[in-house]
Image (tube, rainbow, N blue to C red):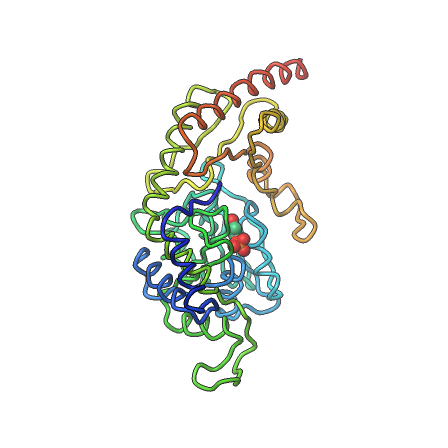
Length: 372
Ligand SMILES: *Cc1c(COP(=O)(O)O)cnc(C)c1O
């Protein structure tokens, strides 16, 4: 999960310092945005201060109002729901698919009410949502779609990249994401009206041609040129960064293939996932306790892992009746992400896989003992 900053990052940041152009007015912001547009074949991309502000900005431009309902998956990072709630909106939690871990059109449909304004599909752990049926439903119902692509830069559905389906695609460049600027984010859109509105709202809502005149109540969600300098250097090597992660993923799949208590879901035929974290889930009796024991024993061996997110419905700000979310609850209790950075060596992956097997054997035996 470590960033790989071995390209032109240092040179470009040094250029910012040497030239004294470090704020959002510096030249790297536009260069990073252009490179991002090229990569996604998007007409407009705007940098933001982080992924959460990207979501918040998109919802502001879509004029989300207090009481408006926005459908979000129960299994996601909390920022997806927080962005809705900071506008006074109501995140309506929906369970995710057992096989792809993401929102599906059929599940979204069950949560529609007269107050539904939109939906935020989250491409979780690098796995794209099946966007075409979601877009069909959104068009039929007149809903906006904001894609949360924070974990899935470069993933695609039927050849089209995520972030290019909805009204706005939102990305995060936090240090553990696929591409990083330390902190940072991006919005992409086809809609000129939204791009213009987001550009103004991002910059205090200030009129572009009349300084200190604020037509809207805006924000300061700008990215600095220092961060964009890192982002541009990362863009130049994005294919390599992705390839390195794919290689790690392949090595794990090979090393763990014969373990019956692990499930590493294959991508559906319409999906091209990217390898953000190498994520798997435990299955069989006592899968949850087994996951916890394996995590603890890997930690003991100095191997840092991450459990899946807590389902939103379990946490105080988003509390909702648990019976509606059996899948996200199961995934959360049994899912685990392994060290996944592209700089891991084959030996590193072998060591993690070996430790996991050992831990699983031990946990398996004690798991059996408690169920007998
Ligand atoms: C990381 C993340 C965000 C928030 O991005 P930040 O840059 O940390 O604000 C939002 N949604 C998801 C799914 C994420 O993983």
